[in-house]
Amino acid sequence: MANPALKPADYEDILNLPEHLVGEIINSRLEVQPRPSPKHALASSSLGIEIGSLFHGLSGREDGWWIIDEPELHLGGHILVPDLAGWRKQSLPKLPETAWFETIPDWVCEILSPSTAKIDRSEKMPIYAGLGLPFLWLIDPILQTLEAYQLIEGHWMLLQSLKDSDPVSAPPFASHTFQLSNLWE
Image 1: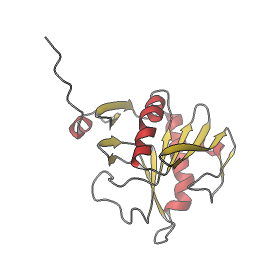
Image 2: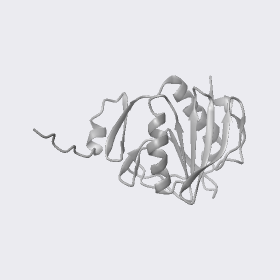
Image 3: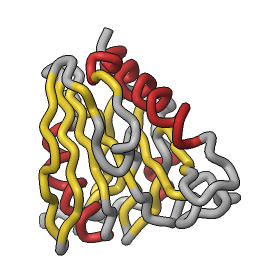
């Protein structure tokens, strides 16, 4: 007997997951990961504080940002949950009423872990490029690295590769410098 065709994943599949799991729909497949490890969560939270404290609070200003932890993005048939995302308030003047975003962020940060690095690099990076997302950071809390990318003519260009306690001053937040070690324990 032949196997029936697999049904593409849909939002209902994500809603049915236990709370301790994070689900994304990538290329019509449900991808499920456990909640982040403490090192992963610390790097994400620390970066959110570092960036958010300066850029998120600029309400009413042209250069203000929305910096959001683990937003659910419904974009181009995918449901993606980056660790952090940012929208210039020019791009997204007000937050959506839904539990998800349908506006492409101006910046995304993925915190790499052994269970997510392959998908973040080989599947999500090309999706973000195809959507026209301008800036992407990849942070590895185990290796203590940050890679800052900019989308140029549809391809990711590595702008900076930093490690340990290097000073970070990377687009789109290059006006602020902080020590990469601020993200580690």
